Amino acid sequence: MGEKTAAQKKAQQKYMDKFAVARVRLAPDMYEQIKAHADEQGESLNTFFNRAICETMENDRDRDILAQIAREHGISVERVKENVEFAHVLDRYPKLKQYIFDGGSLE
Image (cartoon, rainbow, N blue to C red; front, side, top):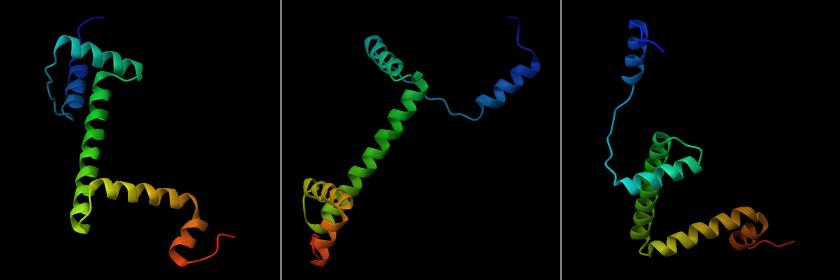
């Protein structure tokens, strides 16, 4: 393949200008572990890094929300998690939810 044309270089630069670049320094063995994991997931390193960062940020926000709810209600974060899990269970059993909250019948 020969040298890129001016139009190709311009198009590539226009594409690259849409992104910010962040460099990550990793120990060689850590790089290999991450690369192998990304490959197992069928992802490029870039896609894996973006997913890992987004998931971590979401987990951090969730943790902060749980902590805020716990503070507001004077209970532990673990108790908030238990209540959230219980609410999800109740959502799967509407008759049980109605019985608990409305004093209805389980029939």
